[in-house]
Image 1 (cartoon, helix red, strand yellow):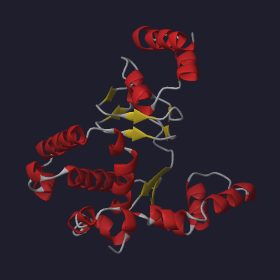
Image 2 (cartoon, rainbow, N blue to C red):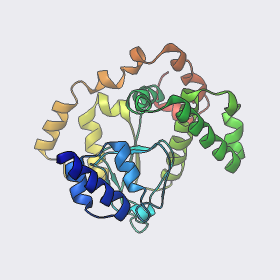
Image 3 (cartoon, one colour):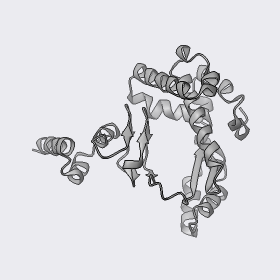
Image 4 (spheres, rainbow, N blue to C red):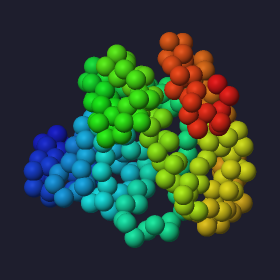
Length: 247
């Protein structure tokens, strides 16, 4: 009976746009399934392939949101409305080694690597068509493997966000490893930027949760295969992001 009910709820949610809350509550869809549900017309401006969205993701204005291919949304809040230009933005940037290690374990492990590779390759070709400077930086896209393609997109996206974000006084870049090493100090700055009060209770919880964060943040050095670690220097060597880490 339970299986039948879930099938009915899933059908009406996907095909008719009905019983959304019942569908989410009783079916508890995976991130991949929920992203497929969000593809229904009228929800997002656009959404690509192989996306995953946690049920805890709060998307305030989906009609202003465009997601590309291979996008994974955790429990986060996306503020898409164009009149909220005054809101503070905190951009947390992780070392590409830590990023790619997490990407391989949390994203690629649930995908078909061949499909991810081709989607990533197409993404860089699309960027190259639109921007000759990045085309020159990328080099021979056709010969790149899955991880190298993803690392180049990480650099492109991170530099682009920082380039335009740094033009606004409301933009704040935080290096993930610095946050893990000295969470309380960095969190104070983040709360100040967001104009939020940092209470003793919140600070205490942050200290408790972050005791092992620095070790976790640097685990990639022991876990990421050497052949992938060798790709990091060429990605960072002429990047303005390189100043944040000693590779």
